[in-house]
Image 1 (cartoon, one colour):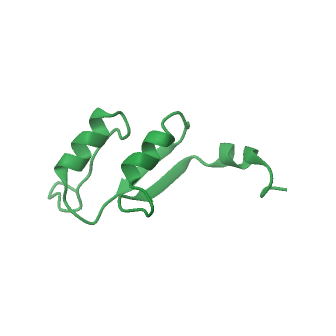
Image 2: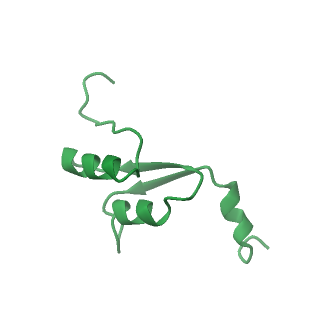
Length: 72
């Protein structure tokens, strides 16, 4: 039933994507799901503030937390 029914997507409240998610990037995937009413978390293994700024300015993320952040 769930494999054929798109209502299953309404149950998901959080999506976690890696920035280098093949065959696209997390930025592109988040842009495609902009209207989806769920929390969207983007992970990246590299410190790329430019990436975070682009995602924030495009309205794709609400906050950027660096794993190198001393405040955490």
